Image 1 (cartoon, rainbow, N blue to C red):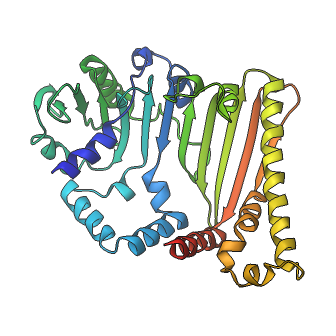
Image 2 (spheres, helix red, strand yellow):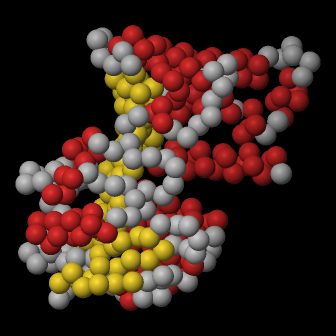
Image 3 (tube, rainbow, N blue to C red):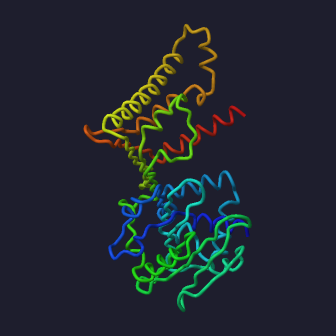
Length: 346
C-alpha cells in the first residue's frame, strides 16, 4: 500500500500555478513557467516507447530480475500502465523547501483504479464537483504534512482523463474546471516528438545548497542565473540540450571558457595515458601495461565522451548553449566499462 501512495505522491508532487488558470488567454508551458521557480515536464510514454526506454528496461532487468514483473503487477493494480498510458506530466514549483504543490498528469483514455485507491488514503475526504467529477483530498502520512487536493476530470470532447493535484482546494477546482472546458490543449508539449524530459530552474541562486564563498567552484554556481535542459531519445542516439544563463554576456563567455578548458584538460589527460602506456623506459611500464584495460583508459573514455559535447556562446548573449549526443552502442559500452571498474575495485 505504501508503494501505491509513494507513486501517487510522485504523480501529484508539484507547484502552485498562478492565476493563469482563470485567464481567458491560452496559457502555455512557457507562460506558466515564467512565474515558477522550477519546472519539470516528463513523458513516460515517449520514453518507454523509444529504443532508449527499452535499453533502460533491459538494464533494470539485469540489475533487478523481478523488477519488470513487479511493475507489471503494479500496473494491474492501477488499472493502467504509467509507462505507456501517461503522455505528459507537468510539475511546477516556487520553492525547494518541500514537495511541489501542483501537478497536471495526462492519463489518457482511462483513469484505471486510481480513484478507488484514493478511498484508502490517510485522512481521505471527498465532495462532488459535478455528477462525473469528484474532488478528493488526503494527507500523505500522519503528522504535519499538508492536505493534497486532487481530481481526475474527463474532458467531454477529447474523452481524455487528466489528474490535477495541488495543496490548495480552490486552485484544484479552478484547474479541474479548465480541463473539463478545454482539455489539456492549452498545455504545450515539448518541441521535439522525441523529447521525454525537460527541466528548468529560473533562479539558480535559490537552490538549497550551502556553499562557502571560498570553496572551489562556488563562483561557478553564483555565476549561473538559470538553467534549461532537455533530453530526447532518437532512434539510435540519446541527445541532451542545455542552456545556462548568466548575469551578463561577459559572464556567459567566462562559463564557455571554463567548459572548453575543462574539456581540453580531460583530453590532455587521455594523451598522457597513451604516452605513459607506450613508454618502454618507464620502470613501471610492465605494471602499467598489465593493469586492467578499464583502469588505465579512464581518461581516454571520458575524452571520447566529451568529443560528443559542443559548447557555444554568441557574442553579446547572456546565454550559453551545450549539446551532447551519444549513440546507444557507446552508452552500453560505457555502462560495461563502469561495471568492470566496479568489479575490479570490489
